Amino acid sequence: MLSVFPKAQKPDGNRTAPIETRFRNMPNIAIATSDADLLRCFPVMLELRPHLLESEFVNQVQRQAQQGFRLAYLSEGDDVKAVAGFRLTESLSAGPFLYVDDLITTESARSKGYGEALFGWLVDYARAHGCRSMELDSGVQRFAAHRFYLRQRMAIVAHHFSLPLM
Image 1 (cartoon, one colour):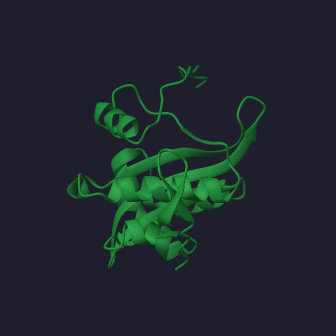
Image 2 (cartoon, rainbow, N blue to C red; image 1 turned 45 degrees about the horizontal axis):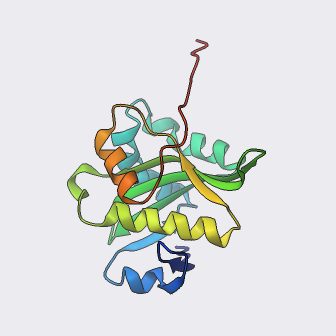
Image 3 (cartoon, one colour; image 1 turned 30 degrees about the horizontal axis):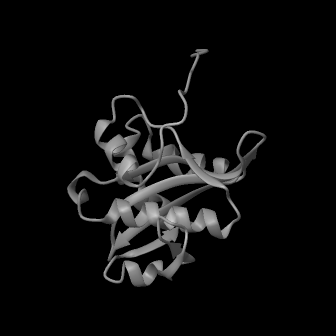
């Protein structure tokens, strides 16, 4: 299992101990690369994306991976506690950035530091890959998630608009 632990930063931008030191007692964080790892992530992802079908999940993630999508997961033993779907991308407005498509901690594991650890890993991954920022959209009804993102020092900087075409 691949585990990437670049240096963490304090809010003021100074380098501190590597994330494995900050979260010494935290479980492993890795990018899912095998079908088995992807399937281990499915029950957690299903809590955020209930429309997904297990029979299509691996193929969909593999298709998206061809466009740069990655699925990171935090596990403790055999149990996946949190999952993040993300991609490195670039835009004229933001330059290079990490976009978080999905970020979920399984309900039974919330408020135990797993989400914070995975969020910190994503920030460190983005910095290690030269990103200027980490971006995400969050459904307007997800109040607990919004409180979490604000505690992580994220700012609300835009409104996301959508036009259904089907």
